[in-house]
Length: 371
Image (cartoon, rainbow, N blue to C red; front, side, top):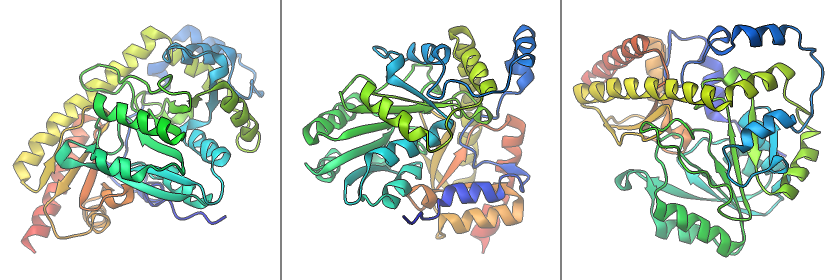
């Protein structure tokens, strides 16, 4: 098996701790331990023994997760080390050489790379800026055939921040049923909606639907490395056996903290913090775009990201390299997400630093435009 370079992750891993400003991040700036953990819980954590915990997820954590997926029980949930492990386990277990899979673009490209590595024939369909980042349904219908084994979408979408409307959502489900295909839905931005209306989960919409989520994006807690898969019990049980070959279990402290985060009152407080950060920074970004005149943005409706098209004759990665080298600001080039000519701006930075970073990017763009 050959693994191709995961360009986005290589880009971020190489540079994110070596720049002055990081606008490539796709979540909000993380909560501190002190902000998250009440004093009484800290006392209990200090007494926690650091051994293995239940490998598919503790009963207590599963019960908290299932609250947010109507109809789900403990047997429908597998707890994973971040949503990246969840994605890996799904492709590892479901795809064999020669299978046909359909993948949404633009997107977080981990599953795309894994599909190719495991020998799938990958077909794509594209979200359209002129349709406010909805797909052309005729293109979607052409992509899906009776051979299609897997359909992979992200909702809310990374990098556009768009939420599928009811018509598209229904079409995706109907086409998956028609093909008899597994429908995998990445829902890691559920809860980060600017208007506060939680995006309905796809779980329960179709018997072969599997959803992935976690605490890294909407919750601002990537350091906990807690994700989960919600799906049919037989699939979840199978995935657990595959997990024996990967991380075995999440850490005990992460389990305890995840339980705390997913208590309804705490969860709402954390998600409102996320919304407040992204609303404020989106206002700043839209003002900056209007001022510099080089970008066009369909505003995101969810997620700590914005995907903006630029009017410059330069490849996105080349543009991001230039800004990083000259101004110390890390941007996320769109070609690493499946669409050149765009930059994904992370909206999760502290507002003062966000303004400073955009000012530096603007300086470089003026120099570039001047030749």
